[in-house]
Length: 201
Image 1 (cartoon, rainbow, N blue to C red):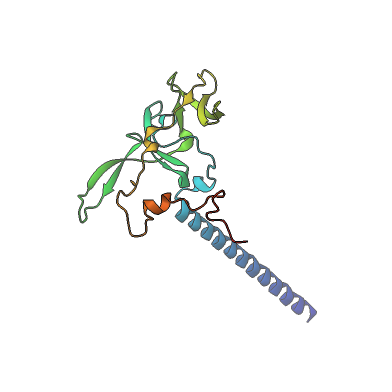
Image 2: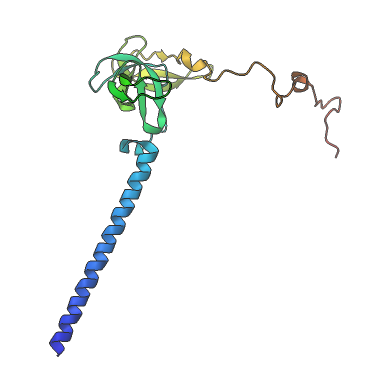
């Protein structure tokens, strides 16, 4: 009788351990799947989990591709995708895309520029026209500029692209209902000597 009870206890304990192990594995896999889905929906690439905080490559820069099928080719940065650590170089890294016909556009096979990881491009030195690393320096007047650094580089200032000076959305030229009139903006409402606008203490 004692042997049967011990055998039953051992069997039950083994079943409980197996169920606990199975529950733990299910919870772990479900948590991993949720994490992967949230990351994929937000970033699109798993490689973009660690985002670059300080970007030294700007839209409009002249760069050279240092890895991939378009290696050693130069181009201009068309778009910077900071949420995915990627850039789009104009006319480079072309891929075929099948687009279905819809309202207002035709379907077919089109060549589009695919994004490149930012580590696969380097800014060109404005003097030597070779790829170089980028650093920062302060001029005598206090302005912060980018400079080329590394071996066999000129150390010259990398100018800020002209395209960044243009506004993507032009300022409205007309006065709207919520805009403050120019007369009220230029009106002087405070003068300490004359006592205008002084608080009543």
